[in-house]
Image (cartoon, rainbow, N blue to C red; front, top):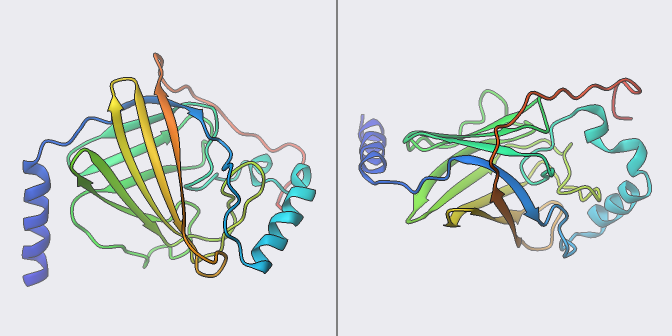
Length: 210
């Protein structure tokens, strides 16, 4: 009963505060690739080199698989915002969407402890939406160059709208199995004067990632 009361109190506080409006259709304007090399441990660095040498054969995107949390495309993303839930929809990937729960719940990995997009909970830090995600498989990449991660990936995203036409996302990446230390980088998105469209990814050449 005490835990329920605490969750109800957190929800009431979240609802009583007027959150900034992040809703809209957004396109990445810079930073599809992570320019700085992640601080990889030797095994992860070796895996990245193997990925780079075989991008045309093993890129998960060629098999219509989800991009995951960190990797983004130059196609639009739509944010739908409510007091208790923020949803991120991607035009470029019909297999996945992301949900950021704002109702005070803890992480719940009982249903799917190793998923493509992980389990995401969120809270507001003044004008910034802070999204905490865990529970990943190791099948996605950080960007188009094949940067890998392990199933111990932990991602903190900070969504902030510095002005009406721009959205900043700061990523803090933790992965004790693959990285020697956490690293941080930022992407900028611009507001698009359009809606996301229906788009299908079809894999006609291969059936599974080898």
